[in-house]
Image (cartoon, rainbow, N blue to C red; front, side, top):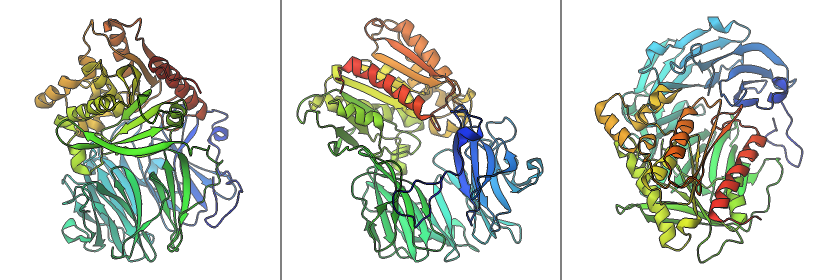
Length: 587
């Protein structure tokens, strides 16, 4: 859809592309990503069906809705940069039917994609799992290529397209760096964890951009709980996002990083995708909280951030109570946790409680809207969201503290959260349910097998559970830097020690467990949920009382782009299963 930046009022956005119509009525069709040209005349987008995320790149004329003939397959999670005249673009793609070897090409509209110029070949990258992304300066002269290697390292290269000269800005260093062009001041600006685990704001000259020449505009914050996530340039200054123990903050500063002042957001929440105007001090950003579905905010200096989205109004969730607490992870480190309760939830005393966490890939747990969370709380329950190590609640050091050989630390933090909820009287073992997905599904597997007495019921979604063989399936070699490589003897030892599939013990009473997966999940192979579920069913000594169920969704994937109807159906099943076991009363 599209909406003018100065539009006001209740008018609905205009539909530019309807993926279901484009796919001949296939209701699983989804737009995976999109990128408008500089003048907004054309929009690139990725179309996939069945939850596969296997995008085909298409081009649409924004004004007429007419599709151009260009169609490029194998553009999953494509990074794209338009050239100034809108006649060509630089983009990333994969070789035919290859899960790896993502590389960079240039496409001229109307040309045969098979003839596209290769800008960065697979052999030019340090590893088959390297993940390049691209950005062009507004004048088209400079190409910035950021190459992710796992979730702790980003190499950065800069191409002067007028001379064909490449410069390496940073390479082979365990640091996350996210730079962007500041076309207003002819420089690069962005955030790096180099010499700053919680991030610092830096600038670099385009003709001398190596890391040794970076200048710090905003140093790492002295508050150990505040992390600098990103920065974006505007004509007269910079906007930046930080999080403090997962709660998003927005800042406005001068172009040199001075005179920093906060932008009021109204309540604790999280900021998503950001859009900045090329020629005006204008920012559009997505905001969400436990009590507010994602809403677009529009902000200009000197004014308050105001809702700009014309999507249907959210339900009245003013009765939700939200607080952030912290608890001891078991080694003296304080772990943050959000608690969400409804009007029917006891202020004092135990209540059916749903505990969730993620703990991996430097992803912090943030206060975001979830219909399942609100439904749980409206029925008198409580939801707890723990910011365990492995995430980014306190920056890259927090991430490293829960990855690779230290992965058990994530699990121990989670167990400590459950124990704290019981010890403080907020719930009981019989009222406690656990939920996590993907890497969080691995967390659920660890809870089931290491602490089967921890809770009454578990929802284990699209999980990774066989840590001895995980790199053999789909795109999982991408995750070796995060977990370790089972082909290495030392790393095999720590992976095998906690691998949930290998920790199932026959004759053990396991909690009631619902495993959910999908036939077309192209990230985590459904075999993890299927074989773990079968093994758990055979091993449990109390399966009659605590059933182990495996739910497999057809024509769906890991979760991205799933149709609303399928999301609602699965959420209803999860709510019914967990609520049944912990005595959560219907509304």
